[in-house]
Image (cartoon, rainbow, N blue to C red; front, side, top):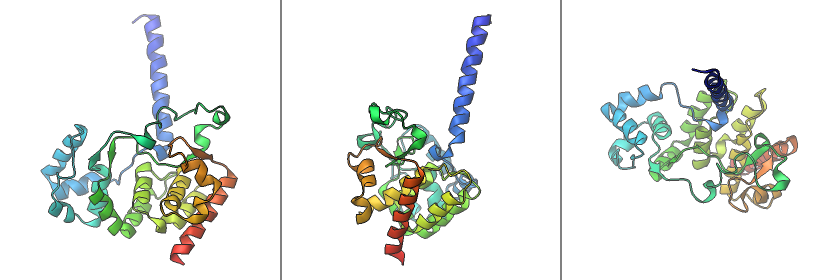
Length: 255
């Protein structure tokens, strides 16, 4: 290997290493799973577990692979793990998702070029793949929502971020009950960089058509154009305002 080739190799290795480290340093953009996830499902499903893994790798999984009776027979925790590992719908990014990769780092809008991505609170959570939960998966998680919230709490204890796949489940199950905990998780974490917690709070208010939020400037900035690239700035004023609105929303439902 000549000197030029060695130089190219080490530069490439350095870039790759730093890319991996950067990705791991921001777990809010990563998927994470319970440590016993594989064990729990292999014990329940046996050889079928390996078939599910193969089918997902091939992009060929569908909601009929587990029969309705098999799916219903899963316990609340087994269902939670199954939904995390094997979302049953395969759909390529479209509509509000189609611009995410293209404009992830910088918008073409000159006004927003000064706002770095880490200082943007987007209106939507992405799990960064082409799989999503099927209707029956969402409905079962909703029926077991209290347990699901507890599973998520247990699995993020001691972490600096709530992983994006957990946040997505909180939104899809309309987990309004999780609002106080999400705010507490952010405030009690010395890191205080999990900006996507604000996305979850805003999504819950938006999907529930909470009037004080729907009529706000924040809502217009994040959701008026239905673009994943629309955002509010991640700063102390917006953090405070979002938390206050979210708690008022929670109190209107549960107090």
